[in-house]
Image 1 (cartoon, rainbow, N blue to C red):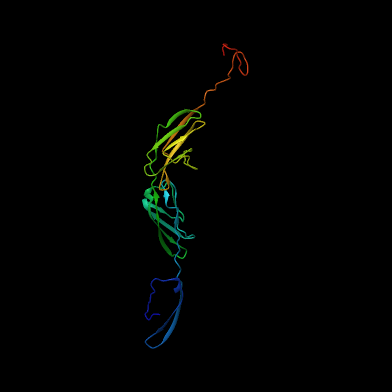
Image 2: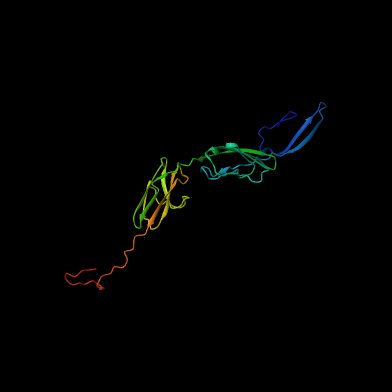
Length: 231
């Protein structure tokens, strides 16, 4: 209710939607009644999500959680801006860590601004390999030693991408390879795998073939007389 000419209702909500009536009485005690319909539209409801925290080098995915808006205005660290619902930032760097804001405007002209915190984790230092090239004979053991993974744990793989299960979690790796191959070493810290630090290569040589054993005379098994010579 109000008894002034131009009342206001601060912090309007959709519950204030409806008919508003006013009765005016002039100096002659004459009255008149007027009515107006008022609609208070709800602001867009945002449910912001992301794939944060992520490791350096991956793609950051953002989502404001509201579809059908007439405009999206994003702003974030390192000069980031976007005008789409689900922006991405490829090859993420730690400099992209921070607060991301989005302002969404719907078809009724109502706007809502919200924020989300993003964390891009630094990759650990890549390890190095001591004496990375070796040669062995088949069925021999080869050993390689790594260094430089001071902030995490060493992981050895048989592929340069660090995919699948590691073949060793020790600083040193020992193996009995049956053919020439490479070993790739990484460092994992804070759930992030380093860039490939180094690779070790072992060349495996086949053992010599002793060939066919023969004797003179050609007997099998070999029987000779006392004081005879075995050839």
